[in-house]
Image (cartoon, rainbow, N blue to C red; front, side, top):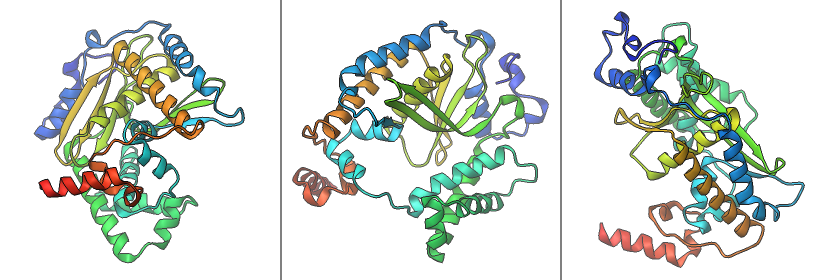
Length: 324
């Protein structure tokens, strides 16, 4: 973790009181200089050219005064059921306790990185809620109008999740270069294709051509294959941004105190370029060229806004219920 030291320097005398979960975090994130990969100076240009060349034929279908915006969520959705993707694109997003919880917890983690007083989970969560409540965005509007029951439930689940972070993670030291809620962005095809995202936590930095950054996504609940793809997408955007990939990406499951790391390689980045290309192609085809969306029934059918008008989805849900 320390920029100039060997792995053993990560754990100091003051770290002797780390619990096993916190020690596991240290062991997963530490790397000696010899274990950090280096990449060619032309990697950024190679990936940019490969992506722009692959999507050129479909970007031509996007009006010149528009940009196609891609996030990890849109990319995951278009690789799932395309009818669900369209239904959600056309539906106004509504905040609920379940969706607000993640945003509040991420803000609490961000505040805790630079918090100078004693860290009390409920106090920091209340500060996070207050910050959003003062904003004019949609979450701020929802917080100002939600019921006392919803507010109490949101506070309860947010304190629980944030407390798990504090319990499972060691204190983030300034030498680790921690940055929470870090926005990343890459503009391609004369700004007609924009790849963007917001990373939960980054640690470390690249040194010259040597990778040093680690990107972490915090999760509640269980593993989903899209979690790997989300992080690979972040790794690609980071590489397009500064030219050097992160050395490691990882999902951290707070409910389980479990790390799922993955090393970043050029092959991983190339495969992510192909996945992004396929996603852009399908978004353009069904959005601008009005091609028929493909149906891919699955567990997410249960909360699809198009379920009432989708025979395929209803059949899947009914069969799944019969098998339980």
